[in-house]
Image 1 (cartoon, helix red, strand yellow):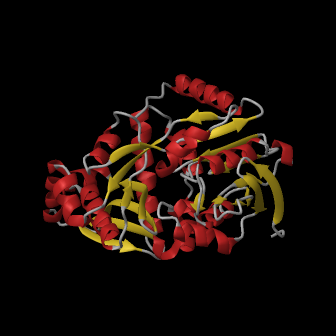
Image 2 (cartoon, rainbow, N blue to C red; image 1 turned 120 degrees about the vertical axis):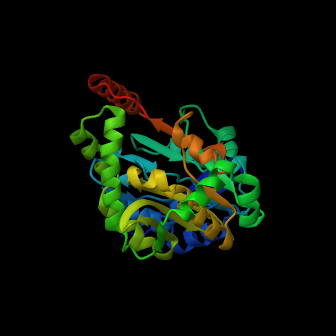
Length: 361
């Protein structure tokens, strides 16, 4: 790894120092001290991104000299010439990035970070922000950056699990959990990666169901889904996050019925991935039980939020998440491009979907 480069820039709040890549010790200090930080905003997550894709670390530490500091997780493609590279926090389906902060970090500092990103030589720069910071960054977005809307379903864990069970879970969730407890399911949680093969078997079964529902050729669906989420990605995350990555698996009569992956950092738990055998999971309500157990554990660990991720408006998945008492919050992605890459990509995807008669979930 090359030695970090240090840059000095002028900002509306005075001179600031930028160090890139961000020193790991400082990054961990900020991530551990920021009460809203996610597992996906840590150095370990960046290592997962770089270990499983063509990326390199270009994270940036901003020091405003008055106690205000921020680390922006950021990766760049390794292969293209630097002027044709793209930089993202994060690329593809790696989820929420955005800065972790400390000290006096407000609109002026956020505007300075945006100004620095606007000046980057990369062809495209994109950052997806966590829900807790959405309003701050929306107030500071400069001309030239565009918004791609994302939302997250977040469950408030204040008051502990008893309050969540009684006041936030709806009656259908409590009924589903009780049904699952009577159904003969056996549940285990793995924090070593031992259950990765069983999870991925369920994931591949899910692809068949998704392809049929969306009128997508199975070969194309398998290529697309396994390219976006290859098995070695889950293996890498489980290995590098260790205890912070939990695979919850429900078995029925010796067969895997459903599984979820939950990541935890500080006071934040994130439901990251799910897969199931619908023929076993639906009648036993296995998913209700898995989330109930993961949420209870998050409460016991002192977490304040259980983030269930995004879903399409009105989709059955959105209704499932809302039944646990989640609220929807914006988790915006802002991007700047020197060529209209995003528009071209979306046009190609729409054309391909029309050609195969694709139906959204």
